Amino acid sequence: MSRRRAALLLAALLAAAPGRGQEDGDAPPAGVYAAADATARHLEAVVPGALVAHALPPATPGRDVLLLVAPEENPAGPRRLYRLRPAAARLEPLLYHLPAKADRLVVAGGELLLGEPGAIYRLHLDGVPRLERLAEGPGLEPVAGGAGPGLALAAAGRLLLIDGGGPRVLPLPFDAARRRHGLLLSTPPVTALHHAGGTLRFAAGPQAAGRRRLLTVLIDPRAQADAAERQAWSLLPQAERVHESRYLMLDRTPLLAVATSNAERMVILGRKRLRLFPLTADRTRAGRPPLLAAELKARLWQPVELSAFDADGDGDDDLVVVERAGLGDGKLHLGVFPGRGGGRVAAGSRDSTIDIIDGPASGWHYGADLDGDGEADLLLRQGGELRIHRGRMRRARKGVVEGRPALVVALLPAGGGAGAAPPWGHPELADVDGDGRDDVVLAAAGAGGRGRLRLIVLERPPPAPAGR
Image (cartoon, rainbow, N blue to C red; front, top):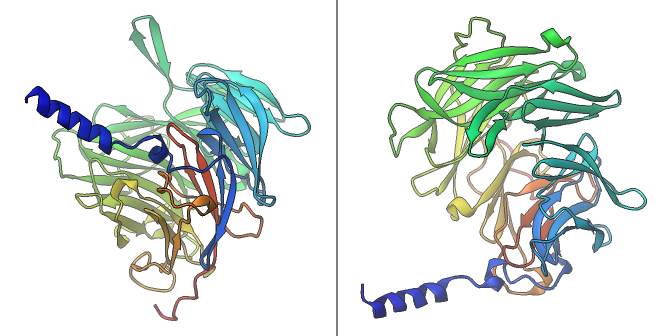
C-alpha cells in the first residue's frame, strides 16, 4: 500500500471514529433531568465524570441511589461519591478523596461497601459521611448472594464472616502459581446458599479436576472445624470445558448448573451444552452424573444466563436459561425447564425466541412482573427503546413470553436534547420511588466524558386478552 493511500485510509478512520461528545452520548451538563410521555417517567442524573459504579437501593424501597465517580478534571485521581435523591430530583456530593482505585460499590448485609483491589471499606452515611477500612487481602471480594444479616468476604484462601458475634475466618481452597516476583494465590468464586429456616452455607468452585470432573467445596459456618468443609464432585458426560457456571437453589435444594462445550475438539459453530448437578458429599471423588443434560441454542461465543425461580406459578422452582442465539447475535432465546419438586426439573423446556436488532449491544432482564398480571415478563433494551414482552408461562401452554412487545418505551433524551443515545448497560430493576413496583435503572459509564444513570417508572400496559 502506498503512503498516500495509507494516509487517506488513516484520515478516513479518524473521521469515522467517535469523538468525546459521541462517546458519552453528547451528555448535557452535570445535573438531574426529567422527561415523561404516555409510557413512562424518566429521571436522569448526569455526573461530572465517569460513572465507575452505582448501588441500587437495598431491600427497603424508596431509597436514594449512590454513584461512585472518577472526576472529569482528574480521572486517575481520588474518587467521589454522589447521592441521587429521586423524590427531590437532586444530585448531591457526599464524599471526596475516596481511594483512587476504588471500583466497586455494593450493598451487602444491609451495609454499603466500597471496594478497591485488595481492600474493602464500610461507608457510613448517617450523620457526617465517613469511610472505614473493613478488611484487606489479595483478591478480596464480597461473596455473591450475601450473608444474611452479616457480611461475607472472600480472599485468597480464607472466608471472612462479620456478624453480631464478631469476625470469624474460615479456610477456603486455593491455588498457588509461581510468578516472577513470588507466588500468586487464588481462590475459586464463592457463593452464599440460603437454605430453609435461614441456614446459610457457602459453595466455592467449581474447579476443574481433569477434563470430566468438577469439584465444589461446601462450607457450613455453624459446624465444628473438622466438619465445616465437605466436597461435592460432579461428573461431566464427556471431556468438556466450562464456559458459565451458577450455583442455584431449586426448592431449597442446592444445585450446580454449567454451560459447557466439547473439550477435545473445537467446533466453531457448535452449540453449548447445559448440565445440572446435585451437590451431595462424595467421598469416592468419582463424581455424580448430571440430573439434566441438554443442548443449548448459544454458540461458543454467546453468553448464557442461568437462574432458578417459579416461572409457571405451580409452587416448584424452574430452571431458567436466557441466551443469545443466531449466527449474528440477532436472537434472544428463553428456555424454562419446569420444576418437578425436590430440586428436579423436566427433561424438556418451554421456549421463546425474540428477534433483537442491536445484537451484542442490547440488554435484558427476565423474571419480574412488570405489568401486574402475575407473570414473569421480559424487559428488552434495544437501541433507544425499552420493550416489555408479556410472560405466558401461567396462562398458556406453550412459549415463555409473547413475541410482540406489550409496551414500547422510548428513551427520551435528557434535558430535551437530541444527542446520540449513550451506551446503556443491562437494565436493572429496583423499587426506587417506593410505590411497591419495580422501576428500571440504566447506567452508562461515559468513557472519556460524563457518566449517566437513568431511572424509568413504567406505565402499565393494558391487560392481556383472556386466553392468550
